[in-house]
Length: 269
Image (cartoon, rainbow, N blue to C red; front, side, top):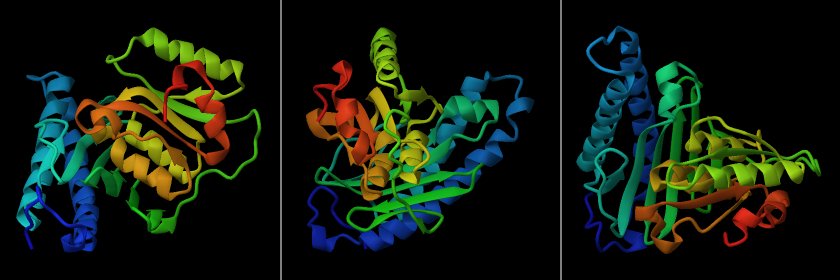
């Protein structure tokens, strides 16, 4: 049933139906993106960036059409934009485009559903890894049906945090943050996809993810995954984060105080 997404009461929303749609759609969209990448090396008239933009657009158009057909909900997407609404999908058709272009595995389709400032649903599908991450607010998070928990290791000084950086913030700030982490015996790595970096925290194979500015479509599904897997996440949607993006910090409960004590993150809440 289609609802008016500008005036939706919680009880009237078919979240289960939307979860089923998001799962099926993430897999379908991921397979489309992977199939389009098979022709990347044969394209001579376009640069790899142009080709990737075509793939992004094709995947986002598929997502928008499927959502429109099923529920008529509005969508905010990386390629075509969109406007906030009471109930709105937030979509990154291909997160990790550099990895996608170069044929490495850390890229994904990311879908999130937001209702009145709460992330209600998050689905991430990584086609090359065949990893399907699903989170529903208050109901936990899974990867390929297996319940997820953030890392329970009590490693003291041996924490590992993934990072990303954006042209929206001076690179020097990220380098200063890296230096501060190293000085505090926190290792860092970069996988090239914010959504996958957050999923890795939920999966328990890294202890945190930090980016001084990230867009909502890159972050929302992964943030719900981490929170539902028992981790801590900052209030990303504060200060118009849905439209403007924000700093993202997501980590194990054990690591929260250590990260927020770093100079670059002291204002994060």
